[in-house]
Image 1 (tube, protein in one colour):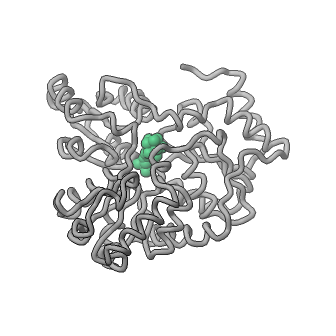
Image 2 (cartoon, helix red, strand yellow; image 1 turned 30 degrees about the horizontal axis):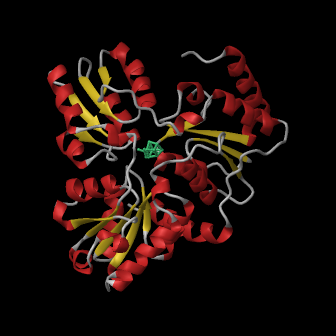
Length: 354
Ligand code: 13P
Ligand code: SF4
């Protein structure tokens, strides 16, 4: 739906008043009405780097979800303020691993006698607490665009990886990119005693996958892939690695949001694509590439937005920008100093990956 012209004008005016004092970051899953005001758009890896590269901006307005704003706060200087336009924009996947659960898991690994061999690798989609745990135990952060490099690095440091919190990204990267088998992976369930695993299973595993997932990408099924192939002969199936293993295995291409965009930019006219990721992005890409004769459809028959990403809408952005323009700091995301120090260590290990 087209954005309210009055709100568009208010956002424009407030942004102009703020000038270089504000820098607006927009994740690819944001609504069009928000994306139009982003100074840069990107996947979570690119946005983390872009936030760090703007020391002159007093306010970083992060149009994305809570863990992304936390990461931006960790990577920017102390006097820069990171603002999330709606504090309720969380991520259900990030919420699936709490600091207490992860500390308990480490006890289980210690009990099984393997903690010393284990290197934690945590997906960007995790709280600052989990990133701090990762940094403290010699591990790194990864995103969907560098998960393979992060795992290669981790297996140079130790024999086993504890992958948090997205089982699918962990499994897909291990099996698709690292030549491991499904049997090399075990699933740690934080709701069961000892993660639902025996010490022997833990000792035999190479990849200990945390039992978390993205509910948006979890909706795509093998059936959605088979359906679209039957409906559109010659279609290329391109999915995000947060999808289930069977979906990724049946797809033609797999990659982060940034990868998906680049693949479609490079696609020849007349090609047909079914995309398995969040719907705001897929719709935007379908509209953008239709004039070039590229047919782009959503992989599933149902509609699936990320409801928390969608919480950031134009009214919230206008309120945020107008408040900042009046000198009122709202919705600041600030990670405490101790958490920040260890989380930063883990994030910097990621940024230093080749
Ligand atoms: P990327 O943009 O890093 O591919 O991440 C997708 C996602 O789910 C972000 O929440
Ligand atoms: Fe979290 Fe999934 Fe939404 Fe990304 S798409 S923010 S992983 S719930």
